[in-house]
Length: 621
Image 1 (cartoon, one colour):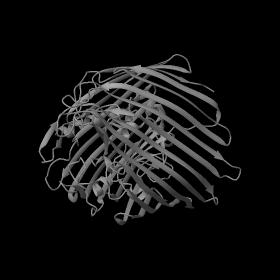
Image 2: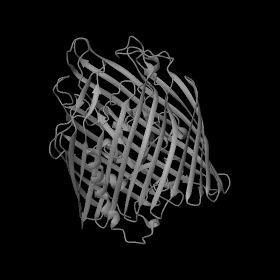
Image 3: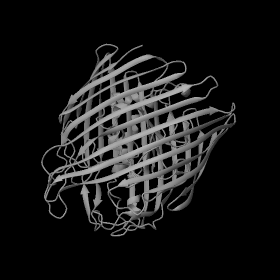
Image 4: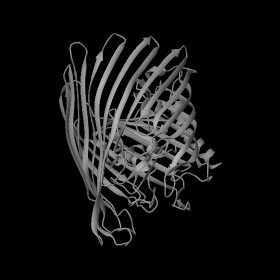
């Protein structure tokens, strides 16, 4: 009953904006139809995609004034975040109730993630260097390969466009001894677009754990460099390249194992980077081909100092070298084909004594989309050959129908898989973790059904989706890792928004039933109900707004399977901005206005109320 009431309330909040749409308005003029490319590697509006997609553009990023990347995505439809504290601490970003390592991160097309833990380092993404975020919910393994059981989030760094060089800069400070600064330039000629920027973020943070380590705040600093260039030749060939590089330190609390003595210092020195270069060639009027070379780095040195032993250094570095060949073919006026090859090699450099320290994966994929009157059909198929576990074939089919000018229906079915990590396979029995690896593990596998509907008007939209995902051969076990668990995840997602005059709103609701099929327990840290509401208003040169986040209770489990309860919570953030003139803007925000105590991961604190201010400069042309 409570779920039904909450669902009705969210829909009611969005419905008035839709009802205000004047009869006969042309939906093609909609202002809420951003273009995305992640769902199928085809450039499509969100309305055209046969998937559940959320796009966060640069305008929205600046309006929300996030301190960290997870502030942008937390509470969005199908998205949940749990973290071991704020500001650069270990964070899990789950899509549709699947594990965080079932969620693939791309940066400008570069595949990211740690080969040892399997997860992506969401906590190190610098919001000021991001131009756009695309979240695609639902399986995408048949397009991108392993890890995309729950979906894909692609982050695009800032790019230049034609025009003279424009300088942008910012300087900010606030609670928890936080400061940030950045400087960039972007522009373009008729043939070349370019962008280059650097940003810095530093905070003393908070004491993340009360009963572990020392009582000092656990700080975080991040220095990031981003660059992007594209050059077009006379014959239509395009050369392009991009880099997003971050490095810094994140402190945490730790006691020495076996003694319980707090370390004097515990921190991770990290490097998080995506590099790519490529060439795009128009072979014919209907056929473009593209070659890219890329590398991602996810490096972390975990350092402890003091204690009884004096401390230690544990190194876990992943380097992923990637080669892609992609072909875009227009088979007809209403039919497109994308086909290509993805190849990458993971290399691990670690103080842990893994039996293997590298493996390759080669994937061949194809995507076909066609329009038949009011109906759209889409299919994708992929074959992966992995050095460790052999081959795997995945596929997906989707159907869409334009029921009315404003209403679009869709349905899809897809299979996916997640390859075992190096920790799952090769973790040495003498290591500090409680388990040891098993080289005979098979990939985790899933199948997902989805039904969805999207209503789009010129000033508003509502998107509703229901889904069921079944995951088999989940990797768990103690002391030896095994393919033993099965999970069933069912859910309802509602997302909506409107841009009406000076008002702007976005609203999200997720209802989730995530069950371990063996034990019957809820999956850990999956809240059955979560919601987010963003509301902003422009008043002349002023803008004001706020974000409300709500999340119901959830559970987590110790090694014996004993549950502990994480209480539900609600938080509110407020923000304002004032344009001093066309180039200078001052921003201010209050986070966790009611100073709530809450946990998204047991035993780890989140910040109380905080205040931040920022001065932003954007040179006008």
